[in-house]
Image (tube, rainbow, N blue to C red; front, side, top):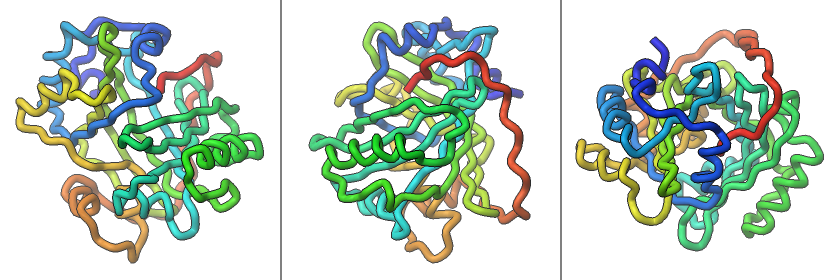
Length: 277
């Protein structure tokens, strides 16, 4: 059964990408994350059906496969900044929207109030997983503006994260909810996979909790400080110190070593358009 079917996304009204972007692009936002059993996630979707639309990408497709390659320094400066909850936290990644053949270079930083600020540059799909000269210039400019003392030439590809995402949006109030399933992290020949009975939910909005946050709290679900990249490094890199995120991840993720397989082929790209954030 697909993630869309397991979450009951057919119950929601659809919205186009343009409608979602116009109402809830949210490049500057507060993110709250929750690890939620599937039955509670489906209940949340049902409760949000009156106020939220689901992103519908045409021909009935209501989910997208995401591939994200994260970049870090040899000392794992980005990873350590997040684990240690430093004020100047940052992430650099290339992200591929697999079904659509779209790719972006993204840089996420924190502002002085703790809100997430995301900058993105669209690049050809063939450049997924690397930082070309143009991409490196973009990354360096954003990090410099955020006073992050890291240059693009210090960065190399680290963990890859893959998952399937559904996006809900409250078009009237500009908040969004994403639900990520079949989540897996890969580093060389090792993988860490989220329990298939759970999804990672993220609410993206203003400083005040959104309706989805209040509903989750009412179901007894509490937010967690969790990053897909931090989990991937923590579980897949030997010798890293133990910490709260790693202990949480061990309860929900299965780690395995594999013989390095050939990468799975990606779907043929469709005509380009601008993806949702």
